Length: 250
Image (cartoon, rainbow, N blue to C red):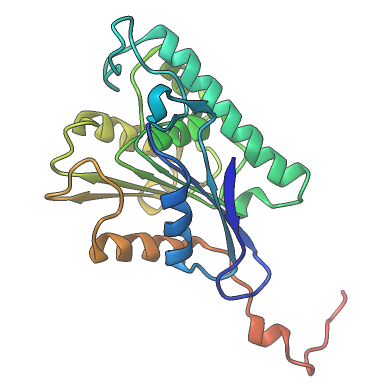
């Protein structure tokens, strides 16, 4: 299930922003975030993870419990979780492909913002499912990224100098759920994939007193909005409305 809304400025959307919640969440707060951001010429689609947790505990992108029904830490390799993460990433990529193939949405105008487990799925999609030749509009990972496991070995076989998808990594300095070491490895893997322009494509923001949480301050929102201001595709609507513009055919 998904909650979708059109462009906040009333113009035809040129961009699509997919929002992915974390484990135990749902799409509702992310739909509200998308509306609150008011990104111009941008449709927002908050997706609900397909797996429902028992006892009304929300939804998850993949089953990540061990045999003792404890959540497997992201830095603990686990074969079954790796397979489920790959399946979740491929599921997300198939959704992006549908936007492209069925609705003619250019890949370079599709953006993904993921939190926690949603960020981990988005990361694996970008490095494990998206062909190296495909550039997305941009990816924002908040409190998530690389997950340890055998699936990560595939990242080493990715073609170097992949298509240039801009990436913003946001993590809290006091995050006790997603380890700082994994965040550093996430940054390194992106820079290896985009090595020709890594310094321009990959930005990492560490919020000093932030815990494992979504965007929670005006400064964090400014960082987010700055990223989108630099990466969104925007038409000059005022120019397009002018009647004195003559198309030149060469």
